[in-house]
Amino acid sequence: MTVGVGKEMWELVAELYPLCRSITGDGVRETLAIVGRQIALDVHEVPTGTQVFDWTVPREWNLHDAWVDDPTGRRVIDLRDSNLHVVSYSTPVDQTMPLAELRQHLFTLPEHPDWVPYRTSYYSESWGLCASQRLVDSLPDGPYRVRIDATLAEGSLTYGEHFLGGETQEEVLISCHVCHPSLANDNLSGIAVATQLARRLARRLAETRPRYSYRFLFIPGTIGSITWLALNEHHLDRIRHGLVLACVGDPGPLTYKRSRRGDAGIDRAITHVLARSARQHTVTDFSPYGYDERQYCSPGFNLPVGSLSRTPYAQYPQYHTSADDLDLVRPEAMADTLEVCWETLRVLEADRRYRNLSPKGEPQLGRRGLYGTIGGRSDAEQRQMAMLWVLNLSDTDHSLLDIADRSGLPFPLIAETAATLQDAGLLAAAS
Ligand code: ZN
Image 1: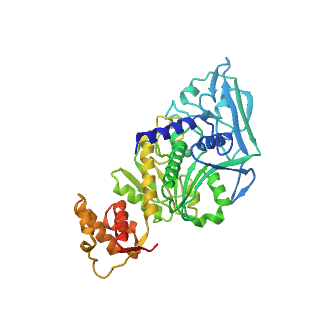
Image 2: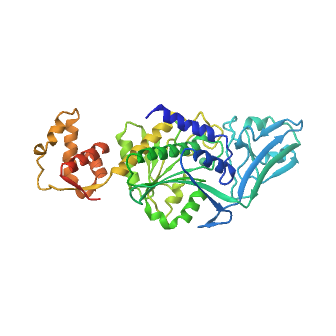
Image 3: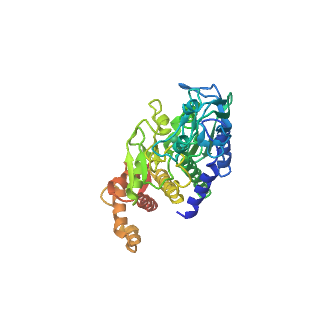
């Protein structure tokens, strides 16, 4: 992995960072337009009021300006400094009020007095402002002039979809959320890694067509995935594997959360890749909390979708604060996440079952020149073991990933060995 790709992803994060995103509105559209310069995106607009299972697509929220002036006219809070200052989905305000009243609408983080929290109020009408504890402690008595120039109106929910057709209609789903404002790890790192993964797949497509089709979703969290599921309910049986990417740019070790099924192909592929690599990592069981895997893995769908993060949501102090910024996400961390995603896709692409065409006793490898090709290589012993394992377990019941796990040998070696044995006429693909 080159440093270049990490830097490219970091630059995309930096470009998207200032945009004021929410679950609807122009911030999402601008975000998709920027991503759309790197990969082809179908942008969907789903009208306010559309019923999606138990939910309704909300009114569209757009924030134009917001500020608070103290009694001397000094601007103490200004949207232009940070778009975290306004609680997402705040109703419009144009009022003068005493400090005591303003305080009822102020959110701070007393334990991190210099940080600004990130707050939302999507589904209850209210308004609020977020600021550092240090600022709020320094505010003199009022009155304060408070202005939130926002619109909450009929409109639509916007999401982006990138599709790359493979040999089959069976799909791999990659999903990330695009609804957080200036938060780098939680939201933008996932967008950057997903975008780069799609670009890599497209480059590979120029050489050989992948076996699976790939669908990338850039969607607002929760309501976006629920909307997508509702609109695509009749095609969900095509999804063979899926991955939610979120918080994938901080320097912490990787964390994979299994799908609800627990033993789906994606669960097995990614845990194999992580276990065989030298990376420190954690694998956890599914839980119905976190990002959009909650929706994909709801019992009515139970899709084979896992979730990849570095430090998981809510487990790093900067989570949902102004400190989840461009310093927290690292080019090398995103490049490392991308590499694990890529290796995992390669396992999924190559994993299949074979039938040993000479299953009665071991076939004579020397006569076929297979020992010869082994002999000159430094990893000869490992390659010979791979050959014996592949021949022994290729009974159509075991996939190459089963063989890799059971033998303790790396998947790429097992896959390469299967190809060699197939060329030698000893194996036939069974699935
Ligand atoms: Zn979040």
